[in-house]
Amino acid sequence: MASRARGKAPDPPKSPAQVVQVDMEVLLNNFEKRMEARFQSLQDQLSNFANEITGDIKNLRLSVNQLRDQSSSVKAKTEALGIKVGDLDKQLMSQADQLDFLELKAKEHILRFRSIQETSNEHIRERMVIELSKFLQEDRQLLDSEIDKVFRVNSRFATQNKAPRDILIFFVKKNTRDRILQLHSKNKFKIDNKDVIVLKEIPQRILQRRKDFTFLVQKLKENNISFKWENLYGLNLNYQRRNYRINTVEDAQKFLEKVDLQKQEPLKGGSSLDLSTTEI
Image (cartoon, rainbow, N blue to C red; front, side, top):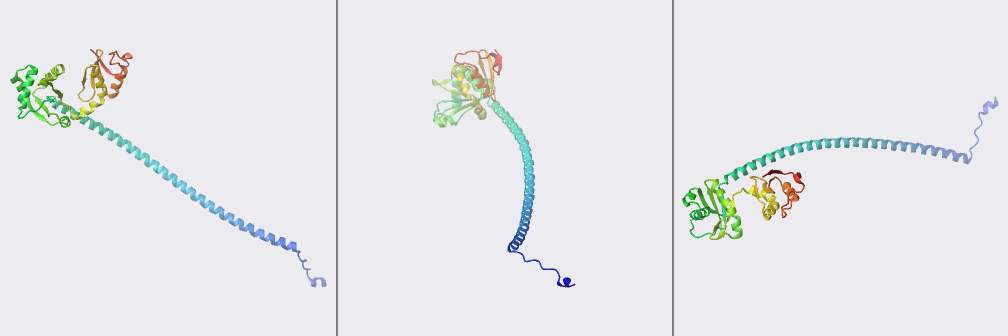
């Protein structure tokens, strides 16, 4: 009974080392809990950031796909528009060619005479009828009946060179104009023993397009090779008893590459020159 009254004996006091060990365990335990909490917080932040990045990437991909779709749509519309513009250009070119052809036909009865000195109080029609009738060896009254009208006009050539104004003669028949041109090509038309320049009236747009072939025409003239302009574009030339149709600048370049005009040699490579030819 006495032992029960006295109760459990108290624990022996802890040594300083034991106290320090307990404190260290408590500190480590608290540190681990804090680190675990921070790590979990960092994981949560990284997870949220990853979710945000994933969402941004998805939105970016969606935007890129939308831009691609828009780009494809714009490209398709642009191509369709390009086709329409191309068709329109062809139509405009065709209409312009038709207008040029009509203008060319309308001017088939006209000749332009250049470098004829002006005189005071001149009767230009009477003067030209007299000179042309002598040139053609034709009755003066008959020639006068074949002429519609005669007058002088200003020209860029006359202004730039301080030369006499050009004379335009409108003939009733194209045949009269052609006879003058044919005779002029063999025997130059002169007035007061001075050469007169005789020109066809050609629409300005056709003259501009003919400039594309200047490099070929110069070579042909230097070598006395005959040629004839087509109405709208290109020319026909005669070389080595063949007629060649030059439709494009590429044709002209190819022709000059294949021949030696100065030696008047046949085409190099035989029939390899891909041009329209007609033997004469």
